[in-house]
Image (cartoon, rainbow, N blue to C red; front, side):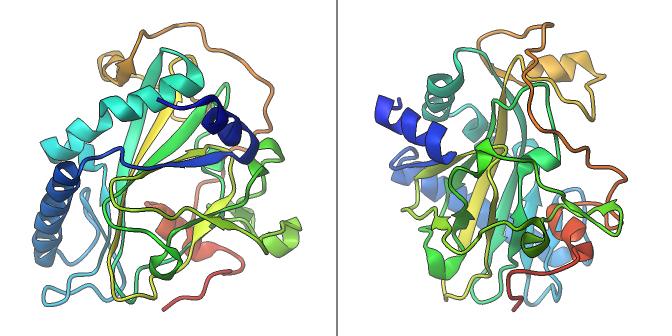
Length: 288
C-alpha cells in the first residue's frame, strides 16, 4: 500500500497523509451515521460513555466534541477499524501482526470546535516498544482554517516531554518550559476520504475551527501485536485477543529502549484529553 518513499517519509517526519483511502460512498456513510449521533446528543446534558460535550451544549444547539469509542456503537464505525487499505498501510510499516486499541471521533464544529494542546500520545499509554500509531480518517476536508492537526516533524525521534502540571498528569506539554520549538508546524491537510498516520511519540496539536465548515475526524489507535502496554495491562484475554486485526497474537513482547514517562499521578480532571488538559499550566491555542 505504501511506497518506499512514503515509508521513508514516515520514518523521518513521523507522519503521513494518504489520499483516497475511503471511497466517496464510504465517506457519505460515515457522515450520515455521525449526523445521527449528533442528533442523539440533543437528549443529554452531561458527558456519557458515548458523548463528550463541548461547553455550552444544549438540546437546541448540540455541541458535541467527541464520540467516545465509536466502533462500539455502530457497525459503520466498527467496519472502519478493519478497512483493508488501513491494514495494508500499517503492515507496510510494522509487518503482518497488528492489534487495534481504541477509537474516537473528534469533532470541531463550525466556529467553535475546541483546540487540543501540544502533546504526545505516548505520554498517555507507553508500551514495550513504540510501533504504535493513530490513523485519522477525514470525514470532511481538512485545512488550517477548520482545525487540521499540526505536526512537529521529527519530534517522534526525540525525548518524551513532561505532560504534568503541579505534579499531576494533564496530557499537555508546556512548550515554553520544555523549550519545544512549535514555530513551524506542518498541518495535515487533505480531502475527505484521506487518512493521516502519525507516530505515537510525535508532538502534535490542533487549533480551534475558525471556519464555517465542520471538521469531523475519526481516529483509530493501532499497535504492532508485540507491543504491550505498560499501564492498563489487559486482564480480559478474550477481549484482548479480539483486537488482533491482522496476523497473529504473541505472548513475547518486543522490548525496545524508548523514553517513557508514566501518566501518574492521574489527571485531576479525568476523562478525555479535553478534560485532562483543563489543568494544563499554560494554554497555547486560543479558545473560542
